[in-house]
Image (tube, rainbow, N blue to C red; front, side, top):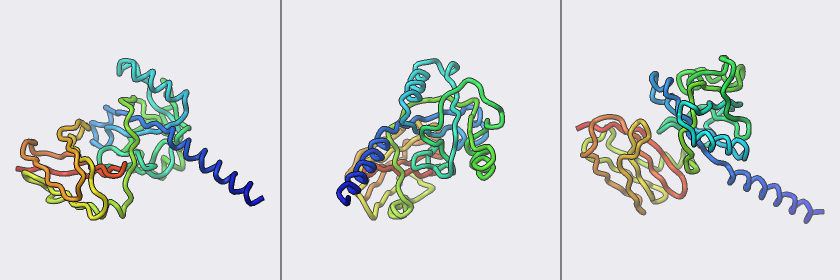
Length: 229
C-alpha cells in the first residue's frame, strides 16, 4: 500500500512537472493603452493548450491589423512571468483559460495597468475576465522566471540615476547576462558574464529611462534605470 502511494505521488509530480514544462509564453502588445502609460504597452500570457498555441502561431503569421485579441479568465499575482519591463502586474491570465477572439463584450475591455492593476479587486472579483480589444500577440518569448524578493535584495545596482556607467553587485549567484533595453523592449546593449561584480559603460546611451535586465541560473531580474549625462 505504501509503495502504491509513493508511486501515485511520483506520477502526480511527474505529470505536473511535464505540464509546467509545456507552457509557452507570448507577449501581447496594446498600442492604444500605451499612449496613457508605458506599463500599459504590453503583457505576457502563458498556455500549454495545443489548440490555443496553434491559434497564436497562426496569428503571428498574419499582418498586425488582422490579428485577434486575447480573452480569458484572470487571477491574482503576476504568476512569475507577467511583466512589462521592470513592472510586475498584479494579475495574470490563467493558463488554459484564455484564447483569441474577434468579438467580446465591452465590460472586459481595458488597459492592463491603468485599469486592471489600479482597480484590481473589481477586475478579479466582479469582471473576472480581461479582453483588451486593441491588443494583439506580438511574439513568443523565452520562458521567463522571476527571482524571489530575497534574491532581488541580494543584487545591488548603483548609482541610479547613472551617468557614464552603472555597477551591479550580486551577493548571491554569479550573473550570466546583462541587457539594456529601451522602454519599447528593444535591446541596445547585451553582454555575457560569469561574475558577481559588473561595471557597464553607458556613455553611448542618450539620457532617459531604460530597462536593465540581469539573468542568472535561468532566472531574470529587471530594474528601471535613469541615465543622465
